[in-house]
Length: 277
Length: 277
Image (cartoon, rainbow over all chains, first blue to last red):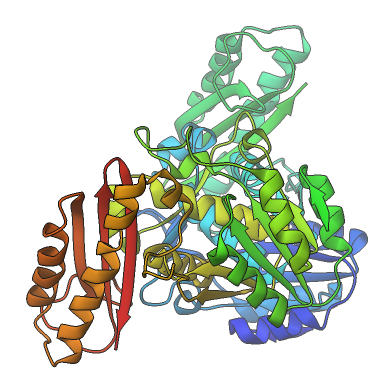
């Protein structure tokens, strides 16, 4: 496993790989969700590059950039047994040197949901992912369904900008009690961790309603709200029942839909989603 | 010479090329300036791809998109003898299909000069060039110094977004009387065509001043203005004596500087520039 930091070293490492290359972009502090992306890349590609970069441009001014968990040695020890070929760990100064001034933006898809709550977030995401795509030149790039809007935005960007690669979106990995895996789960205290299953419970209740025949999106959103409000430690930020492709809120569920939500447990903001249809 | 329109056909054509590939992006209506870029690509690379696409997103609402000159047969007949491998002629619908919503923007460098006069122009340029880079995957891409700010902006974008290629900027090709070659020269009537040498004359007078030791940027700009104002058919839009790297206006010329201007001859807007130092 080659571990490289500089862009020239990455280029050299990339040129040493022949055949199909898979990219797994991460912000580190890896969990089983990330590792499942790596395994899928390993299964589908000849080589896998993992990037570890806590991207400052996707954090808002009041968000958790400085306290975002980091543990490179632990991350590398998790990746080694999987047979990853290259790990790229650029510094912020390598990614955004003095004079940096170029941004990639996706429009309509970034306006609702996470985009509405986190202004500038997706501009940071699409910019850094475009940079990672260009730097690593993968044939396939792997993202988790847990960040559903991010996956949709990146898929859109890849098509719109003619990136010669396939964006692969992999299922959310969950703890035994249903909590979606996230590096931010580390922030939760014991009581919050228990209460955090409320996202999965709210999504499951809404899905049950849908599977029972309900197609009124407002009633589906109300069900999620009801479950979330019954949990004293949870503070709902939004719930959504949106068109799967456009992410616009639905009145009536027809075809594929995305149920999603953002919820605070104390100071920790968690997101989760289910796909219907 | 393969002539392809669709993106899948381009991808197939690109995969058939081995070794180093040069890209010459054009808006067609080719002149000797474009052909000099093709020759340089042919000299430096194993294969050359030329793209011909009048990019609607870089034209302002009141600009000349609909009347921009087009003659594909003539363009192809000029490229065939040069041994070009692939010509890509996508339609606007291929480049910007329904739902298209991704944009690449360079910030500070696009604010002065052409960017100030043509709002949105460079966003269109950087977006389409990013798409062309991704679609054609060149090792080198060739642009003309005539569009000096465009060249600077694209160089910046390529570095910022980690495109794995070299941006090559080639000297401006001029008519015998000094007029910089441009597809828009076709718009000029006979009197305007004669008067259009005023850009070259103004730049030459400013350069003479500089070579005589003048370093006061305001005096250099005043000299260009003086020459332009002496030509009754010319209407100056701006003159500039700016830092070569940042494109910020100078007080005192130190190091490399860019002399540039935009001038109307009747309804035709022409630009030209010299590099000092």
